[in-house]
Every structure is written in structure tokens, then in C-alpha cells.
Amino acid sequence: MEISHLSYVLLTLIVLAALFLPFLWHKAEEQLEIFLFCLGVLAATASNAWSWKLVKEAILHPITITLAVLITGILFNYFKGKITSFIESLAEKFGVKRTIFFAVLILSFLSSMTTAIIAALILCEIVACLRLNRKDCLKVIVMGCFGIGMGAVLTRIGEPLSVIVIDKLSGAPHHAGFFFLLKLLWPYILPAIFFFAYMSTRISGEQNKNKLHFEKETSVDILIRAAKIYLFIMALVLFGEGLSPLARATIQKLPPSILYWANSLSAILDNATLAAAEIVPEMTTAQIEFLLLALIVSGGFLIPGNIPNIICASKFKIKSSDWARLALPLGTGVMLLFFIILKIFA
Image 1 (tube, rainbow, N blue to C red):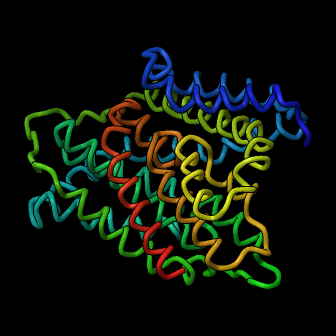
Image 2 (image 1 turned 120 degrees about the vertical axis):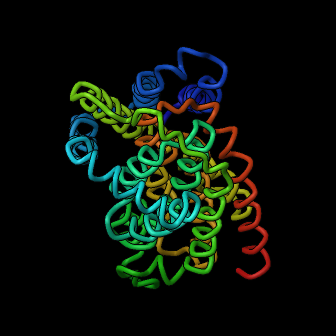
Image 3 (image 1 turned 180 degrees about the vertical axis):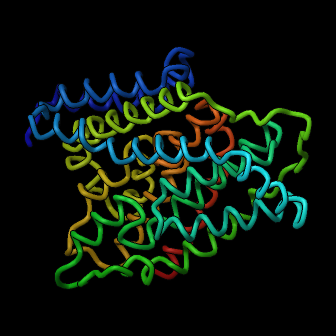
């Protein structure tokens, strides 16, 4: 799709708005779903991407995720008493920090088989049951989402990114199969998951036993959260399609080292969209490693970067600035470490 120079300028401004306005403008942060939806509409318009196919995808694509959030929310609310008792008994037996460590570790690995969405929903319930203070809660959620986002990519069913990559590399010369990404990325992903599980335990671990279970929700609360998730996913579909020409014209043509850091755009743009624009069968294994690790890690930087981030931030009402303050420094450090390892060994 060829677009004008003016369109490239407009799309660049839209990217900058998505990156910085939630931190600079209170209304954008407060109504993040609506803000990103508006940017998605602007991006699709600026790149002349509107079609019935896009409208259909924007309407239908969020349904599965929204239903998962809705049904799981209803089930967790219905069985809340039993779930809470079970989680609290684990915390009493093994301690809060050990319970969190193994919860994050197990959910990160299971996300590759149960999907990142289900893993994120379970993480939310576990954290809510532990009745942690706000600071501890935020740290466990952010570290957990980093781990889940990384673990989900290891198989074809974990998240859309892995589906796209494996499908595009299924032919010669890579002949990618179900466990292609596991075989390719496990030396990086496995230690990183253990690291994030450990970092999730760097908390006070204090529980407020007298505090009411703050995730006790009404049916209206659950419906509103599901509606926000729906709007968020719809926004990402429009945003991703609208920015695709900009990605193809700029990011795709960069040298591997610069491409690695440029792919930190995954912090605001769905990593599956970037992968679809960038992955080609002619890439070497080293180039694929560079590209994917950048997308996977930077997906945890900001709330829009990953579906687990969106689900957890919505449930716990986490602000963009609070998320970024914790996730950006740590995520950038991990990304830098991966970059050094890749430059030496890849």
C-alpha cells in the first residue's frame, strides 16, 4: 500500500502521541481505551487502510479475548470464596513470596499451552486473593506479565505472534513447526522467565487480612471491564493496520542492530503486527532471534504492548505512568543484555 509523504508524517505524529500523551495528559491516561481507539481510527484514515475486511476484523477479532475475560471473570467471581481459601492456604503453607514465585513461573510456562490470556486472568485472581498492598501488587503484576508474555511465544498456540512467525517460516529454509520458537529461543526465554519470577518476589509480602477482598465485583463491573478490553483490542487492530505502511517503509529496511531497538515500538504496537510486516523466510536464524527478542521484551514496557498487560491493568486500574516507571528500566536492562549476547554469539 503506497501512501503520501504527508501520511508518513501523520503516522509518525500518531506514534509519538501514543507513546507520550498518556504520560503528559491526564485524560488520555484515564481513558486509555478510548484514546487508543481514536488514534487507531486516525492511523487507519491517514494510511487509507479502511476496508470492509478491516472493519470486520476490528469487530470480530476482540470477541474471543473479550469472551474469555468475561466468562473467566464470572467464574472467578462465582467460585471466589473457594479460590481465595485455596490461595491463602498456599500462602500460609509456603509463604507469600514462594507462592508468588511459583505462580509466576508456572503461569509463564503454561501460557504457551493455555494462551497468555488465560494465564493473565489466573495471575490477576492469585494476586487479588493475596491482598497485597498497592506497591507489591503492581510489581507482581508487571513482572508476571513480562514472564507470561515471554513464555507464550514458545509454542504456536500461546499468542498471535507465534502463530504468524511459524506460519511465515513454515516453508524452506526454516520449515518451522509447532516447537520451532521453543528450540530457537529457549536459551534466552527460560532464564528470563526465572528472572522475572524472582523479581516478582522482591516485595514486602505483607498481607492485609482485615481488608475486604478488593476484587469482589458486581456483574456490571465485570461487563464494563470486558467492554474496555473489547475496545482496547479493536483499537490495536486499527492501530496496527494503520501503521503497517510506516513499519514497512522504515523499520523493515533497518540494519539488524538498529532494527532490534526500533522494534521497541512493540511497547505500543501489537508485536504480531510488527512481526507480520518484518518476518520473511529469507532471514537467517540470527536475524530472526534479533527481531523476535526485541518484540517480546519490549511488549512488556507499556500497557498496550501485550494482551496480558491490558487485562491486568484493566482489572487493577493500573496507570500508564505507574506501569512504565517499573517496567521500562527493568525491561530495557533485559533488552540490553539480550542485545549484547546476540552480538557476541549470534
